[in-house]
Image (cartoon, rainbow, N blue to C red; front, side, top):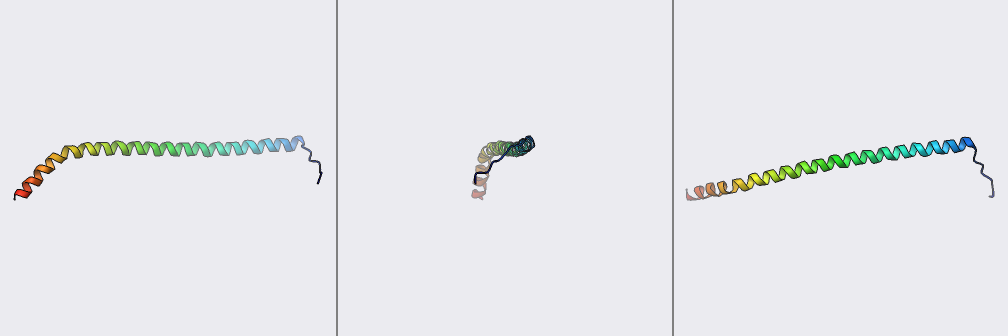
Amino acid sequence: MRRYYYVTPTSYLILIKTFAGMLDEKRGKIEKNIKKFERGLSQLEKAASAVAELQEKLTALIPVLEVKAANSAKM
């Protein structure tokens, strides 16, 4: 259409303001996602440590359970 598009100082400032607003919004979303993933990782670490602790208890109880099973089988 060969129309001229003039950039005035006001429209340029609006463009910069809009860009800054979008940038802040994106940074907020990214920070929110980072916090969410960090919380998830900490929960996974807690769960892994709990599982390791339960495995240790289970390996300690296996001989006791075998003795009790043998005693119950004799009855």
